Image (cartoon, rainbow, N blue to C red; front, top):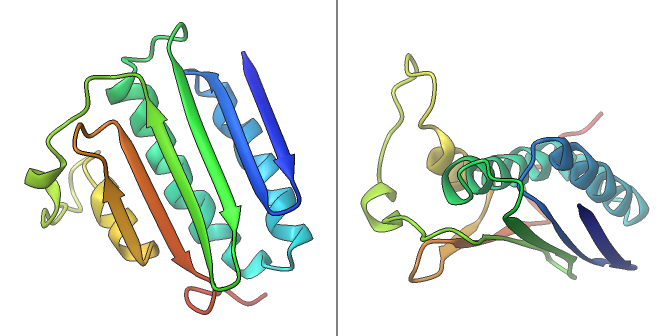
Length: 143
C-alpha cells in the first residue's frame, strides 16, 4: 500500500512498512525538489529521509508491512521540513543524541547522519516521530 498527495511544495505519503516504498517516496521527493529548483539539496534530503524511513520500517514497525508510516514534506522560503512517523512504541532518543558512531560498525550511524545533514532534528516524546529541517542556504552540492 502506498498513497500520496502533493500540492506544489507540500507532500504527504502514507505507506506500508516495506522497503519497496522507500524508492517510490524518494522518487516523488526528487520531483518536488527538481520542480522547486533545489536539486543541490537532493543528496542530503534523500539521505536523511531514507535513514529516518528505514529506521521507521526496521525499528518502529518491526518490518511488518501491516503497519504504516507517514511522511510529510514541505518546501518553505528558507527551509525544507520533513517528518517521519511510524506506529511503533518509540525509542529513547535522548540516550542517542550525542552518540558518535564507530565507523567499523555495520549500523548505528543514523543519528549522526541526521545531525550532520539537518539543521534541526526533533523527536516527539514517545520517540516514534522525527521532524527534520534543512536550511535551503546550506548543504548545497553543486553539479
